[in-house]
Amino acid sequence: MHPRFLYDLDACSIRTALETVGDPWTLKILREAVYGLTRFDDFARALACGRGVLSGRLKAMVTAGLMERRAYAEPGQRKRAEYHLTEKGWDLFPALLALSQWSERWTPPPDGPVAKVSERASGRPVRVSMTADPKAARLTMDEVRVQLGPGARRIA
Amino acid sequence: MHPRFLYDLDACSIRTALETVGDPWTLKILREAVYGLTRFDDFARALACGRGVLSGRLKAMVTAGLMERRAYAEPGQRKRAEYHLTEKGWDLFPALLALSQWSERWTPPPDGPVAKVSERASGRPVRVSMTADPKAARLTMDEVRVQLGPGARRIA
Image (cartoon, rainbow over all chains, first blue to last red; front, side, top):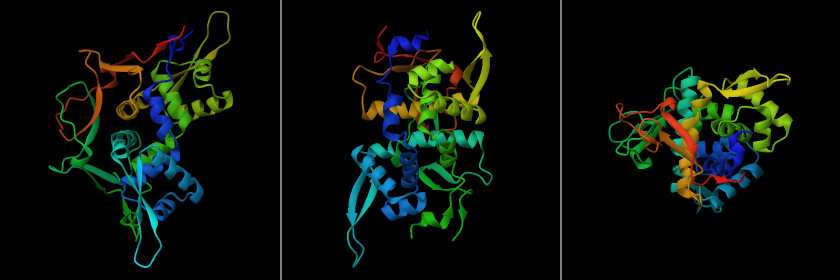
């Protein structure tokens, strides 16, 4: 018997994370939120998914504390809802960046990266990496800028 | 219109990564592979999933280059298949660690972490972080050890 089965690993933090964000729609919604979308109709358009699915996922994300729902109204229109990433939601960014780096390494995008992540202060590219150095400089989300890169093709 | 819609972001590396690993079963299989499982029956037991689903996901992971299939036979038994993470598969570890860190921060496991990730050479804990410092020390998977932590409850 593999020693893994000697232990109850149910409290595993990877497992816990996957319970919240392991759903493909949740990850896709997070990606669009990083690109700056906030409105229900914009998410629906970008993801080309059913409104019921989207509504369910956004509600679950609000419940999980990843998104915050805010009301807004354009002049003369009825109130609508916007969804903004919370601190907890933004804190998933390093995981998304790690996935993105992995993908760029193993499946290089033909026209270069679609998104460019850089340090606000210096403009230097930002990477995610493993370190055991307790003094290693760590950037917070406030210090990081996400911009379109050369692989984002202008279509309109 | 949100400026996001002025661009074709289909080549986005987060999207590409999610196409390969955005499936919840794939992420769960990766987690078990990190815990050291290699055999079909062990994956089936750990994940409590149907053999058809597991077989399909493992095949897709081999095709995607995340896993390598190897034959083995125990004395007097027929040949069976083992699945080992490839370099490309192990290269997803920082993304899993980032998810795990996020989860430990926002949903601290009651008995401490189930897994402990440390630097082989120093024993110091390993973290994933964002940096723009091109000289920042980066650990490779060979330099990192995954061990059970205090939250892994012995059951047998």
